[in-house]
Image 1: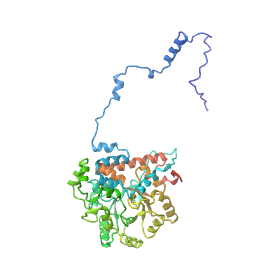
Image 2: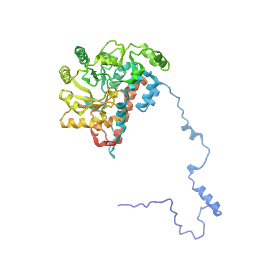
Image 3: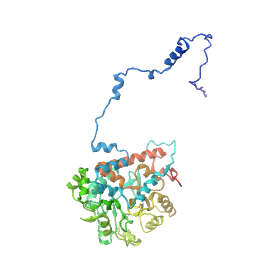
Image 4: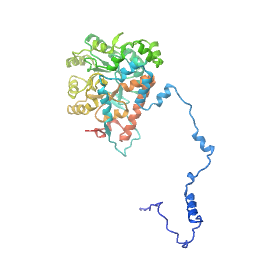
Length: 455
């Protein structure tokens, strides 16, 4: 049986009680003249909670719980809520040359700016009334599980940013249950990284050199060390014009000029760590002295063709991924030549300025692979600065994502603990975004959850 409850409007004047005679004062009503009576009635109408009183100590005690200020690096890392805040910490702790090497891009840095803007220029479309009490961020990439849909991208000269370098990155990835990719230009050897993170899923990124014997040696070392995936980068025929590095006089190793000495005076911890640890060494060569651009130009082969990819496919028996894909046609071609996956990437905006934006390229590649009935993995990097960025990429068709600068900011901010914090921030972002979208697992994400504004 349905009961109808009539709402009570507090602004409606109640009808006089029929027992009250006209012209009489109801029992308990204040007496007095018209003005005084109105004041008394107003005072009586004030809720008890709003009447002034002298506070009691028992009321104040719960509010007077002062915490001792914490200024440790660990406390500062925990207070960071975004990758941008880690970046601010990194900039304060790191000399200008290595910070700019990480933070900068090619020429006018238009590509990097557009890549980040691409993630801002979207609209999420959430579903409501879904059970999102438990969020599962796990996925499978290249035949093996990953606890999160993000891995660490290959970055060069990493111990120059902070002395723990690749060791911090690989161990943080191992702890988080995600892949770690060591760069050919890494400042720790393939063997040392495998020893530092023996239970981690380690991948190796390869630049094909003009000297094929050196390339083959690297491939054999990667296989022997247990790397299950080889990621060949193909967008570095020559070095990009990284003007911040030029202005900073960036060299490997960093040179102690008057400018760097003055810069170091504000960041003594970085220089202390740099000077008291093992000098920079590389996965691909024992020592090098010169500019970054000179190193790249001396190593990389501008004559590479798809035939070289065929040679690599025959040589490497594990999973093969091609990084640096910037058109739909090239994505399809490398798969035809044996690639198990592609990384849509413009090298973080560090090579060709005004290059295609991976996030914008993503839907086209996904559509092409679907038409081809291809199960090749689609990965994406460049511009990712939050977990929401990652979820947007997955919704539009990516199988996996990679972070470079985002984890390096954490590394520069606090070493291994900073990398851990960067991953924690991204995981929390992803969990929250998924819940607010109304999805509990990654397989429920669809292009309907994201709209690119202006399209």
